[in-house]
Amino acid sequence: MPKYVVRPETRHRFSNFGGFSSTRPFQQARAYFQKLMLIYMKGPRISQANPFENKYEEGYNTSMASDFSLTPAKKRLLEHLKRSGPATPTELAKAFGHSEVAMRQHLQSLAEDAWVRDQKRPAKGRGRPSMEWTLTEKSMALFPDRHGDLTVHLIEATRRAFGDEGLDKVLEIRADQQTREYRQLLDGLPSLKARVEELAEQRTREGYMAEALEAEDGGLLLVEHHCPVCEAAKSCAGLCAKELDVFRRTLGDGVSVERSRHLLKEGDRCVYRIRPADSELERTKPRIRRSEA
Image (tube, rainbow, N blue to C red; front, side, top):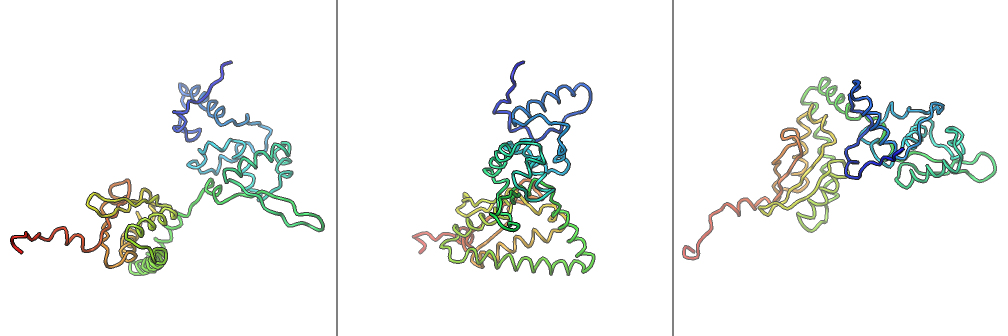
């Protein structure tokens, strides 16, 4: 039987096992595709006797589950830790019917990619505490997260309870807090460029995939390639307006900040043009010739 291998140039196309038509002409192609994926991911054949068979698929965040470092067996292991809490290699080996050595190898591989970490389990009575394994913050992203829906619902509830004026007050309080935090972060930086670069790094930590670039006219661009609060911004235009206001207040009166591209309108990213406030005046005022001086 020939051995099939997924070509490196096609690996990026695979996201999960779904997306194929279930009609008869495609059934064989779909099964073949799944087989190739299992070969590539080096996952063991799924045993119907395994009590954890396929349970991880029920609640997985498929945008993260496509990480090729996670074989089906490793996903089931993460699912078990999520459901049952921290466990020792011995407990996990017993739950999955594997040897303790094999289970330790799985855990070590997951730890190298920061999916799990070990910690001491408090000892009961005398003796040394044993080591148990638990999920990391990174692995939490594999599971459903509805905080976006919650934010939208809270915005709608605030508007119904207190009206648009009350919602504006809530957004203003949030903007004040952001401004204080950003100013503290940028305090002491020597130049506008350094401040914008640090602001971009902070926004990236917040999930905006931001970067600071130099514009052709000599100014700066703050580019945000992603909006982690996009759904909330769609239901509340004030969020975007306050964001622009926060940047202006953070960088100060001597800096001009204008939004030249808006993710909700142009559909790909937000771009802010930043320059010293007097640069536009310097650029547009008429030049005095030597003979006129």
